[in-house]
Image (tube, rainbow, N blue to C red; front, side, top):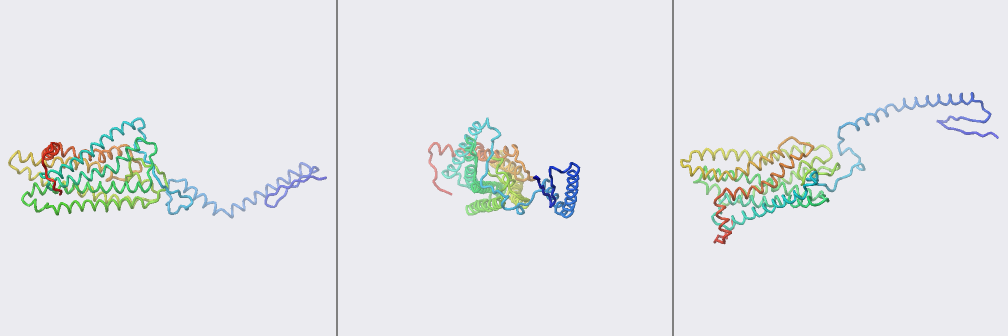
Length: 386
């Protein structure tokens, strides 16, 4: 009984029987291999175009070129719904120390700014435009730190540092609103000092209470509108890359670099808004102080010069620190990496500037010092609210 085994390959068969000679078997195998080679040659010739296209696609995929997210299949995109705030996670051994330091600073910020606002409201002698804007700035600084610091303090003591996409957008919008409001207010305060020193006789007309309230309202509304534009430009993008934010809060730069696709246009619009918010008020402040210095130098008495410089020094100190740090972070070419230096500078204008505001105005301003002593001592004061 013959035993046969058939091996099929593209329609060819090898028949093996126990009686076949080795020479015939090798001959069949040789013929079979030739047929396979011929068929493989025809296959590659007929599909050479498809193979070249496939190799080209593989080369493109292996390069550093980014494929636009719109061209990716929907099933290959995993959308981010929450972010992880890395914060100061690289300083694990100092987490409790950082918490203690920032907590104490936060308490001082709250107490200082609330004290400034309360004293300005309660002391009738401080019911002038300069202190009106200082009170508005203190309220804005308090809300500004409230948006960032509580979450940062919680993350320093927790391993669970997650923030949802919606919460991140709300935090960014709130932070930008108060930050922009502060920048514009500092510019308005510079104009107020210019009007008081350079045009003392016209000052009550130039800075009447209706004008002061209107300027404060314009600063607040402008902050809301510009922050809304910035937040929309960031969160209109899809997030399908890493969800790790290398920062302690949802700032623009570290968040937008997690987005998919090309973000150039969005970043350029945000940069233009940054120039409008930081550079324009800074130029106005510089022009105002140029006229102020020119006017002060013409004052004949030394005491008059000293008093004029003293009223401007507090405001100028806060302006330089605030604008300087904010410009370093926001007015520079885009970087894909948030460095530790960026975090340090951000800490300065999110923590130390709100702390500097009440300290500088209370330590360097004699009127505020006297008003604080009067309030603490239980002296009589007017309950007139601006």
